[in-house]
Image (cartoon, rainbow, N blue to C red):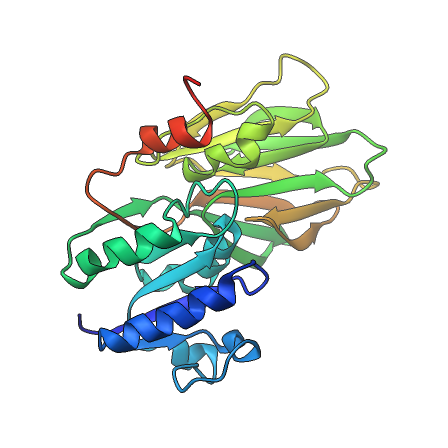
Length: 285
């Protein structure tokens, strides 16, 4: 295998240090070139720890994330634009993105060395915050963007436009805009549909809508959704992939569109999205 393997871990997960020691011993025995994310230095001292993030990202063939879906989402924020394939190992609970167990990882990695895997491309979102006619913030999102009212005692008002056509003035506690990948995350929890990953789509789902007529909707991934705060007494929090990144003030807008690049997830032959759903959601049990 040409290029280095990068390893990013959720250091708070039980058993991570034992996994790390096992991985280092195994990788050295396989004479693999690998590099560890800088924060690993708080657990162990080995030469393979990168001194900084820039050095970590240099010449990477693939990145392995060990933890849960949150760890993989953080990794996407770090390396998404570089189109480096990601393999997720699950030390969490549910794990839609990181479905590979520790045992399966060491069993299947021989296939990775031989290039016997598939790259599954996942649509991402580009999220931009418009303030006073300037885009002040830009984020790239694999799962979803959530817009919520700061004051939970109020009912939010979310004025939404699709390609400049007025869509709805949602009255709800919040609004979730997700990718098909994110359709099994927060969107699913508020009654949104499950959308298979290879569909280009924006899923819009209100949180605790005031009216039963305000239902989740699916739009083409080629559309641009704009959500505007036109109420002077309202302030909103905008979260991307579970991270609260900014505030939405009076007359600010959030623009959501398909990102110009995709996340690349490593999958093995025979893996099935529907089998994953049956397992994780206990279908047929």
